[in-house]
Image: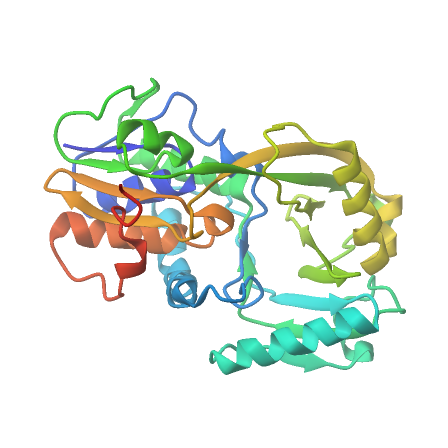
Length: 348
């Protein structure tokens, strides 16, 4: 019996992949899908989410994006619940000339790493998304950057695990369970396996309801830079829009009024119609970061696989994390270099 500790998207998807292949699996989490997953944006954006000087992440991100359709196929095999998986692509836009320069430099950097990002005239960008402001200064189209709705996806994964008769133990793991374990419980992993250096990185995210007369306000993800501040708008299949997200390490696990104001202001610069939307929710989630912002992913001994520390890319890297775990359990080659993800690299 393999125990997956952690009921976020990565733990859920890992348990599903293993159960689908015939392994006996138990999932342990006191409240599945209630952690960072509940507050995540859900963008599958290996190109748009490129971060300078994080080159070791790029092959992981691209590989995970390639694996997502296969993962979605496995989910759909075991449940009819929706996942919010959408493949319309992503637009990245610039609010002013300085932002347009930033966007052009980013597109050049992406192209230098063999990533596809197509610069668009603003007229063409607004033909794709008429709700965009007519006063933008630049636009890029990334057709391969997609999205899921993390809350829907988590519910679908839980339903699929139920269909596969996977036991879900709703208790906190205070020690490592006996037998083979996959440790995928985010920030909690450090308490169970000393040597992992994890820190909470908080992010504020908003949810708006789109009134009937504006639907659909957007059909694809819109990311942008407003006076060099990043912001994104994610249209959901339930006629809501998620807006995010801040990144802060101030030990304040609740939404900040200033952050809510800034997100609404910047999103409104890109898509003025959000001012007519209904304000539904502001929440804050804590993402598990590591000293170098690379995940901990690998087998540390005969009975333990560590899979945590995914920071801003947990939703995107879910497909890769689940796939690698299957290969490590079965003793096969995952087909990707995991040296940068060594769980022991920060152990003193």
